[in-house]
Length: 380
Length: 130
Ligand code: FES
Image 1 (cartoon, chains in turn blue, purple):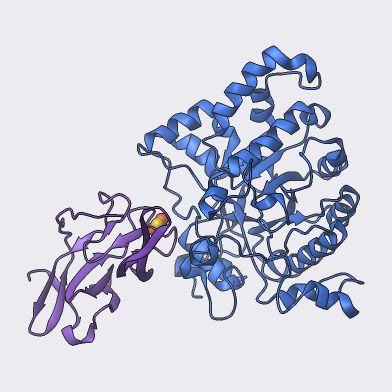
Image 2: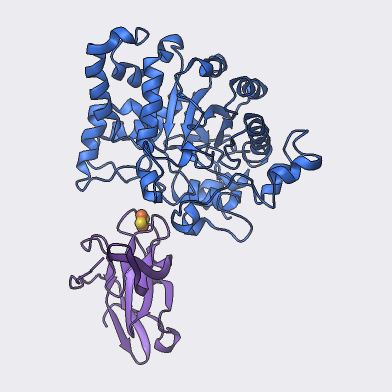
């Protein structure tokens, strides 16, 4: 990778402003066995290794068929799967898309029915990312990461404590198929730990957990498009629970990110919730204010896969109505449905609002540095 | 052709084959031979700008109703490498909404060479059944 001459020659200490923060990228080990090497004992040794790995990552279930195995075609490399080569990822993400800082959402491990197994896989994933993408590959500091945790709250908190204070860990990820709605009390220790360590809580679609992961709200769908189109329904169920259980009253510093569910659905949903709150709030007394107020203060949505109305100016209206503080850019690199054109979807949006969505909101929420090294990433 | 660029010998392009190149070292284009016809497009997807000409060439599964489904346009559907929009060749229009199309460039065969111009032509709107 030859950096452009003007950038490569930048003063070693020179910095530039962070303009684009990408809230959702995925990286992968070259082989599932790389991850196995990071598994904690006793999961690594003796019989468990075969149990967990049969030449790859257990838990991968190809039931639906997204195009190109779910990845953009030009991200496949001879050496390994998309997102496994820091040279290709750096070129496509930093050089071609123009991303300044990227938040990794690790999907290398799969969500599993057994929370202890899941905790081991999460620990392995976090350790592997710690060594590689936010370790050896991250001399420039442009990768930040999200901790994978078990759906068992005790095991989740233990993993959070292990990583607390790491300079590149900015978020923890609750699996949206957590075996319950996010507002339930059993998850509060996770929120408490996140707030205590100044970490954002996020959720990201996964497909692999047995059971409801593949469901529509009322039965098993036949097609990938059915599942893909209904992410907002899953997220609105969790958001409703967070609101009605009073999670944001209990944790006033909690910030929550819904990743990869788009955002066009949020406002009509909030219109309904605000109306019903006025009528029904007595039964949910911990919900003290209009639901939309909590959302504007505590919740963000990454916009990919962005809705594409026939008239692109309609998106500007949605952003205006919802308020730009709730929206953040994300590419979902290297996935097939990614948002790789950073000009896309901003027809009629004022420049200062665009800046907020592309980076400003994420800098504030994740407490990121507003600058990054000017030198080309490949020179670190 | 005035302002045209020689891309290759006409024999270098087999039926169903393609060449990705840059006109004058600048403009990325894809040149295809489909149904004996040589066509050229800007290598730029009208959706979000992916190098569309580098996608896979195949068919599209369509249904006339009931349980029936079959492969149509085999070898004539170019699928964008990013979000899989499907372009019907040689016309270069999307199969779902023909008003979205690849930017088609003029092609001439001169002295056994494929010559491609850099100024787009607007192809006739085809009938697409899908
Ligand atoms: S860029 Fe080609 S389908 Fe989106």
